Every structure is written in structure tokens, then in C-alpha cells.
Length: 80
Image (cartoon, rainbow, N blue to C red; front, top):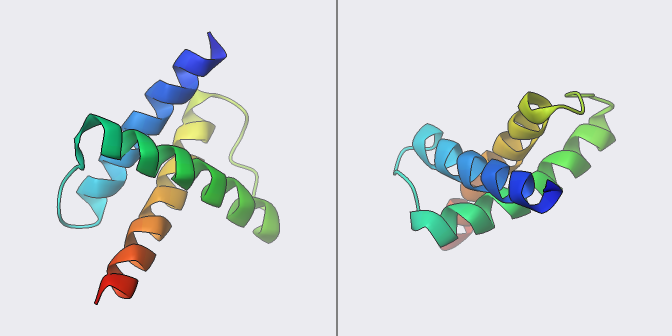
């Protein structure tokens, strides 16, 4: 069941990050990958900064979305 929530949060965070960083989503698989990698990056960054987003669904979504936005911005900078 936790894996299902992880996938749902990953897809939602990837889609939301795509919407926030002008451009749109990346399709279901792309959003999932961006969201999951974003969750790892967001968790690392939040831990590094001493920020606690909470352990619930909303906290996980915020953490993953922030990480996904950072990932997209960095990828777009590298792509240029």
C-alpha cells in the first residue's frame, strides 16, 4: 500500500512541478520519474536546511514537488 501512495505522490508532484515551472507535464511515466527523483532531492535539501515538512501525505507532496521543481530547473539550465 505504501508503494501505491509513493507512486501517486510521485506522479502528482511531477505533474505539479511541470505546471509550476512553465512547460507542462511529461506524461505519466515522465511525471512519475520526475516526482520520485524530486522526492529524493527534496528530502535531501529539506534535511540539509533543517526543514520538516511533516510525515503525512501533504508533507510528502510538498517535499517531492519542491525537489521536482529544483530538478526541472537544473535540467533546463544544463540543457541550455
